[in-house]
Length: 201
Image 1 (cartoon, helix red, strand yellow):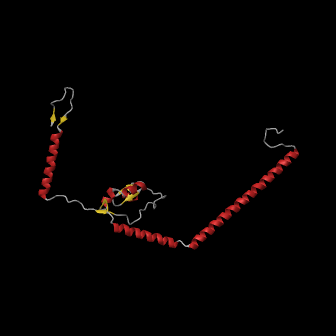
Image 2 (tube, rainbow, N blue to C red):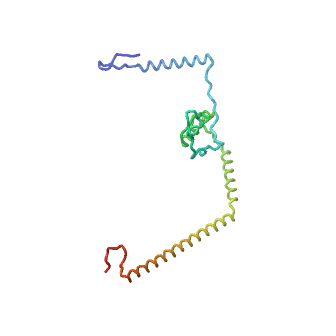
Image 3 (tube, rainbow, N blue to C red):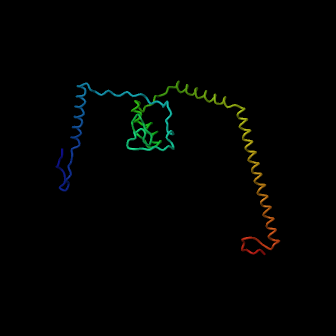
């Protein structure tokens, strides 16, 4: 246990024999296992399902921008933040809520382990075929007429933009002409300019 031999006079700390305590711990564990085997209460390992993808959409935007009055009697599910009814907890923001949903504790409460089922070669090939068919369907849906309509609309927008630019240039040119006429009138009347302290020679 505590041994005082071999210590210096100034060292008052207890010294523990680690090997002795290690053997005691091993004995205690062995006795517990033997008693469980005798009683027949050996805990069976829990068989959990393999991890699978969600078949529902996570609702993160339903409470967005809404105000809620929270009192002492408000149930936990209706308090501010995101409520997880599986784990009976409230998470304050959407990022932490997603982390919680994808986390080990939540998956265990759903009865799943964090292990993923290994896909076979046939499953991967079938998945590729399904995705290829989806892409082909999208390309067929994208019609030539729709494309032509979009191009016409873009051309009309470009023409309207050019016309607006030309009108703006004309307005500026007219303003410049008016300004030059004002300068000529000022010179006839003997004014060299307004607000300038420089003398022109």
